[in-house]
Image (cartoon, rainbow, N blue to C red; front, top):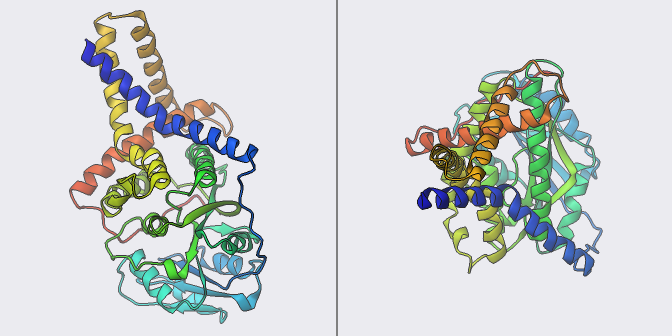
Amino acid sequence: MEVWKFLFWISVLLIFYNYAGYAILIYIINSVKKLAGIVQKNQDTSLPTVSFIVAAYNEEACIEEKIKNSLEQNYPPDLIQFIFIMDGSTDKTTEITGKYPSVISLYKPERRGKSASLNRAVAIAKNDILIFSDANTILNKEATLNIAKHYSNPKVGGVAGEKKVLSAAKKSANLGESEGLYWKYESFLKKIDSDFYSVVGAAGELFSLRRELFEPLPDSVILDDFIISLKVAQKGYRIIYELDAYAMELPSFSLKDEQKRKIRIAAGGFQAMGMLGSLLYFWKHPKLSFLYISHRVLRWTLSPLCLVIAFIANLILFLSKESDIYTTLFIIQLCFYLMALAGSFSNFKPGQLKPFKLAYYFVFMNTSVFLGFLRFIRGKQPATWEKARRIQG
């Protein structure tokens, strides 16, 4: 029984550390730094030139709204250029984009994936800062300005914006609320990561970097945003998280759509870990490696496995009547997974039973990691992406 006890407790500790422990640790460190006055402030108020890039694939339903929202950014017009690239699109996305003379419209009939599209767009970008944004998101009007102000600090190589999942009163409102709650938690982690040293992986909805630091990606890359931003951090630059630059999008249309997205992200995560192997070497990037392993690597590797091990070990200890503590802990685990099952039902009203929805999304997310790993080792996750179906507002 000692082996099962060891496996149970080490699994519990790793899960706790990954989802809360490391965050508590760096939150305390950040608080101490703040009290000690160790906070860098930008002095230069001049604005850099910006190339605003959007890659779109069959987005005719939302592309015009995206273009108008982009052109409404509160930023000097002579300092910003807009590049929309629609390689492989077969609908009216290219036709709609072509109606706007202030937008550079790029199109090729062959579809090679988002990484290839971004490489092509960056090749013609003429400005100092690259801002990338997804076609199905709407930005606040100050987003570009709030991102650009950080580049007065030469140590900043990139700036990640916040992702906000809008509430949905229609179909899949339950899923939307779960997704929204998860992103609030993820946003908190990104903020404290940034305050400690750097964000470890920007979200494609809205992120930026210095043009000189951009490295063209192989067409096979799945998580372009993650790889691009961490390649910048590998060079010794910080990726800052800016809460006042945010991208808003509606939640996934259905559980099936969200699972497809999560599996793709997980498969891309395993690919990324292979491409970013040097980040595991603490002596090369002490702070960045600490955050990368604590926040990302454990999330994609040991944590999902530890959930299974903790349950099996606890079940064996419960059946063996080893101690009352293991009986109590097994009942707690069982109740948690029953909550997750209940949270999967869609008959709850928005705002009701949030713990059930969180439990459900947590299990759903970790199950998707297993499925993503299987897809990765089978080599069945293509780099080309499908248009994500979202609930219509």
